Length: 329
Image (cartoon, rainbow, N blue to C red; front, top):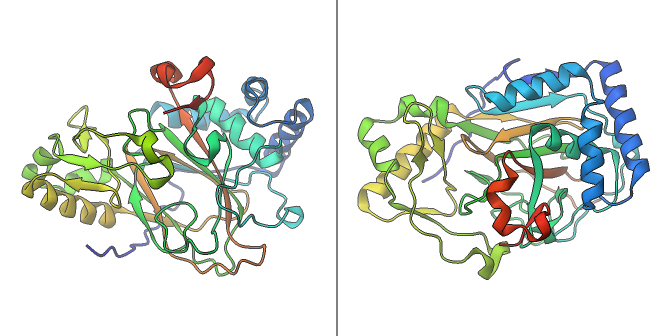
C-alpha cells in the first residue's frame, strides 16, 4: 500500500515556545550539568539530570507535567527555542551506530527532559545501549527503514515488537537537512479511531498480528507472539504497530491493517524541525515516521538526537542488569 503524506497544520496545538530568558535558563542548567560529570551514560549523570530538571523554567515543567498526564488528541508535543548552538556544532556524524557518549548541552537537555517525563532508557542491542543516540543519514543505507535511512520512513510505534517499548520518544533537532525536505510525521489513534469501521476495530483488537524485531536487535529480539494492535480502554486504546514490520496473520487482519494505515495517513501531521526543536511523541498512542530527503554527506546533513523514556522503570526490572537504564533483551 502506497502512503501519501498529508501535511496538516497543527498551528499552536501541542506547541510550547520558550521565551529568550527561558532558553537562557535551560542553557545555564545544561552547562552546569555538563560540568559535573563527563559521561552521558553514567547513572550518576542521570541522577544529576533529575535534580537539574527542577532548575528549568516553571512554565516548561508545567507543560511537561500536563502532557505526561494526558498527551492530547495528537499525542505529540513540540518544544521550540531550546539551546542548540548550530554554528558551533561539529560535523554531522556519518558512521553507523553513532551515539552521544560525552556530556553536551543537547544531551543534557534530552536527559533533563527525560527525567521530567519518567526515566531515560535504552536497549543494549540498539546503538550499543546509549541513552542519547544520533539520528543521521548514513552513506549506503539510504533505503533502510530506520534512523540511518533517508527514504520515506513508514509510520510506526518505536520498537513495537518489544514488551517494554518506550512510552515516549524524544527527538531533538541539532541541524535541519539542507533542503528543508525532511518532515517528522506523527499520527495518533485518538484522531484515527473515529475513522475506523466497527468491524475493523474488532479485528485490530484481536491477537491476529505479528511484529518482527528490526535487524539491529538480531537474535535478541527472539520470537514475538501474535498480539492485538489496539488494547486497553476501547474508548482510548493504546496502539502497537509498525507498518514496515507488522503483518496480519488472518485474511481479515491483513485488510484491517490497510484500513488502519489509510486512517493514520488521513490524520497525520508533518512538521519540519529546526535547530532547537524538541519533538516528544507518546509512543503508546501515536505513530511517527519521516518524509524523504536527500543527504549530501558533507558534514552538514540533518542531525537529530534521540532519547527514549519509560514512565514506569520498575516494569522492565528483569530486563535491566544492576537496575540500570539499559535493557539487555
